[in-house]
Image (tube, rainbow, N blue to C red; front, top):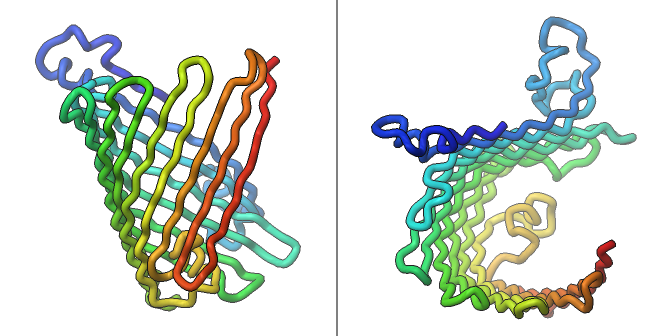
Length: 272
């Protein structure tokens, strides 16, 4: 459902003119199986608590975004709410995931070539697994991410960004705490009618007081290690012909007391 009053109120004045600056987009997808037949909850698609023992499986995604000045070149803002729930019945038991967050983002064009963006997110992430121990957690997380984008022309884009993140597991499940401080930069260069090349470098300082070699540790550390981490990537995409497109990607990362890890891939696409 996409609500865009600017299509009919942009030429109005007063309150209607102000409301025309807003827009709202909602997306809902629900797939749910239950063995409960009591009451209206059996037929209510929004009744999908992953801890409900009568719920056999679910795959639901609810996302709503409220925009303000979405098409403005000077200033714009948006508020997003998302609720994702997954529950699967395996041969050994249930595997459930839950992720819900609120996010506020804004952008401001300081000058014609410079754009400032800021994003703030607060949410909760839950994992419930009943066939193995050590994979149950309930994380409250918060992050703030500023970003400066410099685009002198249509060919070159340089981005400088940072992030401060705070995550804490539920006290009843251990109370582990992680703090992440990140700074990085990306550069993208477009070749007209040929392709583009993009590279990035990030430095992350992670403080974590739990067990790194666990499912919770992997989630809290985002696949990295406690201490100082570096990640970098280079990607190149080019059009070989009108019907062929080649993509090459390289990624690397380095953590304290761990050797450098390299990975890469190549993809060739044919368009018919």
